[in-house]
Every structure is written in structure tokens, then in C-alpha cells.
Length: 403
Image (cartoon, rainbow, N blue to C red):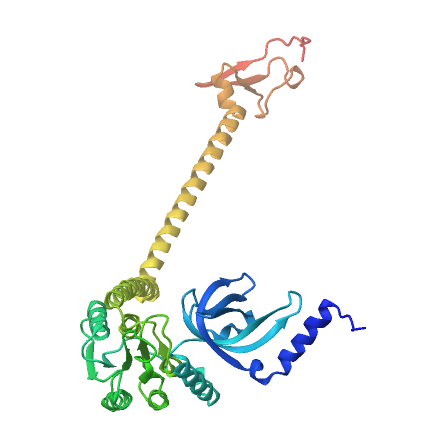
């Protein structure tokens, strides 16, 4: 009786057969892309077809570096990878590792090989990149004398700063002799001593741009003492020159913007600096004037003339204060004296006499205050306001008077 196997066993067996086939493990297949889908996971699912049939393909997200262009339905491509079985569905498919456009496959392989070699040598390292001068006076250009690239560079540079000198080396940028022409242009402009150099051309096919993928051109850019901005093709075009150059611009117009400073911004910055300097200078002058005034006042206060005048003023002030104090003391003394005078007047016999009273003295001059001090027949003196009355006592009567 024949052996009976499960579906999984059969699929696994077939998968092992595919894996043991050397041809299927490393194969390149050309065809037209169809059913192309970019999954959210990063995987790309598509089919390769020709007039005879179709083949399911997948490129996992981890292999996406092997795709250097946005693939779409209808593209003629060469897919390199391995053919294996997906056990769950029992279907075989091509697991893609690299995808190139048909006709450019060999050139692309050369591009990747040279890129890897130069990168390993350190020619793309950041530490070798030279800074682009902020305000270049002379800009060297290595490109074709005709075409959109040089016109774009001239237009952009003229708009941003018409005072910058553009020095063009008319180079061949494709075909026979292009490599040598580009290298010669770089070396001559470097020897001339421009501030910065633009090397590039307008967009084109891989074949058209290939001169900028040559190792000799890359080494000329790397060895150049002048900072170089690569300006090759359109934004999606990438060449070896872009990796080696000190700075990569997506287009020739963008390269001109990077190389030539906008003079309007420079003038505005200068005006801002001028205003700031003017304000700072005015503030400094005002501060110094205040300091001078302060020192003038200190010098004035310390001068003998000022000190004498200050002392005189102080003496006058003290004199006035003493005079005022003396006058106040005299005034108070006079007031007190008047008070005392009034008090004395109240005690003065004359005042009493003026009020209708009189003063009686005996013969001894003593004041008579009671009847016991006099005798009948004794002579007395009565003092009144305007004189003295001499009289004799004829009688004495004692009377009891209240207090």
C-alpha cells in the first residue's frame, strides 16, 4: 500500500527541493511589473509577467534598499533573488533582493559595487566634507556650456547676488570624453582658486548621467581643495558624485542657491547690524556722558572754591540760626520779664496806693498794721499816691473784722 502524506509534509518537501536547487537560490528574472502593491508593513507584493506567463513576487521591507526607484505597474525590470515555496498556500514565488530597470541593470550593479567600495574607503565620510563658504565671491561651474543647467544657475545666481563672479568651464557631461573633461574642469578651477565649485548637469537616463558615476571623477572631487556642490540631474537622480561631494544639491538651481548668498538678506542683516550698532553707540555715549557729569560734579564738589563757598553758606546759615536763636531767647526773656514786672507790680506799695490804699508809718518808720502799734497823741505819717500826710492819733477804737 502506498504511503500517505499530509499537505504540510508535501509542501515542506517541495520547499526543500527548491532550496537545494542552486539556480533557484540565486536567480535574475526580467519581466513587466503588474499588481504592484506597497503594504503598510513595508513589504512590496507584485507579479512579473511576459507573453508566456506570470510569476508571483515579494520584496520584504528589510530588502527595500535593493530598490533604487519607485516601482510601478508596467515597469520593465530585472529582479534578482531566490525562488521558494510559501508552505501555507502551497505556492512558489520569487523573493526579491534587488530590482533594477531593464537595460540599466548592469550599470546599476556597477554603481552599487563602486559605491560600496568608495564608502568602505571612507570617501563618503563626513569628516572629509569641507564647509561651503557663506559668502562666495567667485563660483566655478563645471557643466555643459549649453542647456538648462547653466541657464538655471545663471538665473538663480543673478537674482540672488549679481556681484558674484561665475566662471564656467565648458565640459562634456555625457558620451566619449565626458569623464576626462569633467576631471580637467575640476582641476583647472581648483588651481584657479574659486571659492566654491558646482559640478553637474541636467537630468537624464542612467546612461546619460554615467560620467558622474565614474571612479576617476569621484576621486577628482574627493581630492579637490575647493568645496564642491554636486548638481546632477533632477531631485530623484543620485550619482556617485553626490556621495563624494562636500554637499549635494537636488538640482542645478538648488546648487546655485546653496552657493550664492542672497544679497538682499545680506543687506538686511547689515542694516540690522548698523541699527543695532547705532543704538549701542548712542547708549554708550549717554552712559559716558552721565559718567562725565558725575565726575564733573565730584570734581566741582571737591574744588577749594566750592568748599569755601559751601563753608561760607554754612557759616551764614549758622549765623542766621544763632541770630534767630538769640532773638528767640531775648523774646522769651522779655516775655518772662514782663510777667515778672506784672507780678512785681501786684506786690508794689505804689500800685496799692494808686488803687486807693494808703501806707501808715509810725515815728520809727515802721508800718502800722494794728492799733496796738500806736498811742493817742502819737504822730503818724500817711503815705498816699501824691505825698505824705502828717497826723496825730486822737483816739483808738478796736474793732473785730472778718478774715
